[in-house]
Image (cartoon, rainbow, N blue to C red; front, side, top):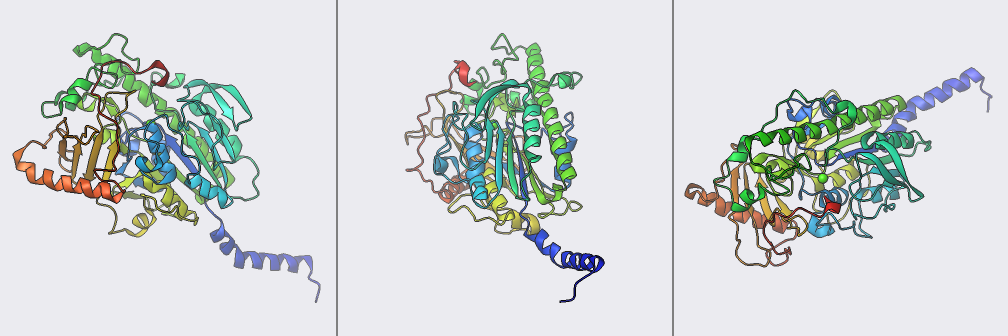
Length: 500
Ligand SMILES: [Ca+2]
């Protein structure tokens, strides 16, 4: 063999790289940066049309990727929704049907699959499946969380099961610092999947001091629908004065309650401003992580998911909190930036109805990892890239009555692209004791007119009852196996201090 001069050797190496590096690049698995907010409304983001809240970093992800305009949770409650995101399953199947249950041992999740495929995996922040358990969970090489809801300031974290320490500072900043530190660790080109569970914008709302006054000039009133309750079931009127109604304590923003005087709207205004304020820090966090990935040269090989676990009512129908199947409760924020899904100069907005259960199968498909068997969700990769005529046209929303939060009945809803029908089962198989609700969400997206008792729509009611049966069957449910607690009615007592 003729020895090569250094110059010739360099040429050979360059030639080799030119031929083979695209193959290596295509083989490189994408990373995942998964950012989950807690109770962020679908419209609490610039992309969603928020008039007052500016979120340039959230918006940029959508403007360089995919904005899902009709994204929903299948149960509007923290823990059930988180378990659905991880597993691709509805709550009755994964079993986390309230905010106290642990993610079941031995159950698969998309991080568990990715870890088994050689991904370096980490979790930072609010986990909240298992109220009192802050220990590491399966599927993560590095795991940092805390008990319960955590606090906006000075939360005690369990650092990967090695020690518990109060980390001084604002929650959003603290988890972002931890995330940056982990991203900067050497990992020999291994792909990674990192999840951040923000506390923001969950109640009780405390913005970072620099954002406390950001909305002080914005006037906030109760929405019109708060005063359009004539055709609503009675439980909605009862809820007005409870922990989850607009005349109640408003997560401590109202000290003397109930108060239905017009001037008490100032408490509602203060609450709303604080809610928005917490999201400004999340936007900063996204900006920091985006810049870090850019500096590392990993930005375009990273699937960035930004989404909320559930929505929240902000005065609509006289309600605060979530749990119900009204639009502000079930709609979530969901944007995904990944040039391997859609190029940054060809952003897309998707109108089809996507669900929390679709996230796990979508991410696994995008990473070329094995699918989770027997799940309810469906990957939206094809839907985004080329359209999908077989995409779902209806889906089930469900929520089970909670003794600890007796302000919402059992809820069973079906939502199509035009209609939403809801019934409130008593829980023992007997006839429903609350009238249902029917909305034409296409023409009445604010759900102002409940058509369920309007004789003109009795045909639609009958059709939607059938749709509900079909939507239940699609996730393995029917009248006899759909177990739920007994509805003990709407109560005025406040929830236990420890679980608020
Ligand atoms: Ca939540």
